[in-house]
Length: 144
Picture 1 (cartoon, helix red, strand yellow):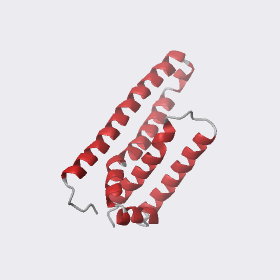
Picture 2 (tube, rainbow, N blue to C red):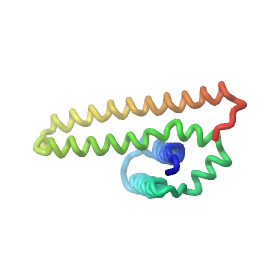
Picture 3 (spheres, one colour):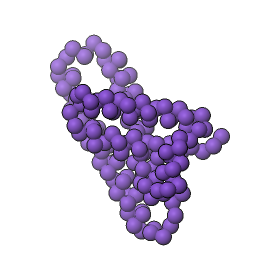
Picture 4 (cartoon, one colour):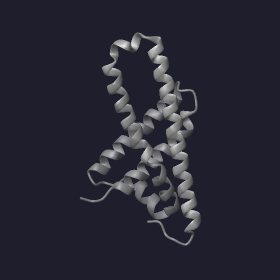
């Protein structure tokens, strides 16, 4: 079986890079539709990777833009953590379904998820910054 971790990280990096600017806009109308299309394309490409078919845009990114591929792989982990947070949140809400009518519970959950979002946004920024620092320190090295 072919090792797909770098390809998967680059795919996740593309998803994060495309969705991050949109996530700060109001989630109505066309913005939510664009995010849905990006998420759908991400999952379809992830299925291709699981069956050892690397999408061409990932190969082209690695061949033509190795520095960009390296930086995308630095932040690509977040797309997968985001999936696990969503699954964990759904499980938690299904276990506490009777409390969904309680406004205090919903406010508490909203505040908690806001802090979780801030935490992971900070980690993504630090990952990207770490990648940039690594690139600056190793200017003459090829990343492929």
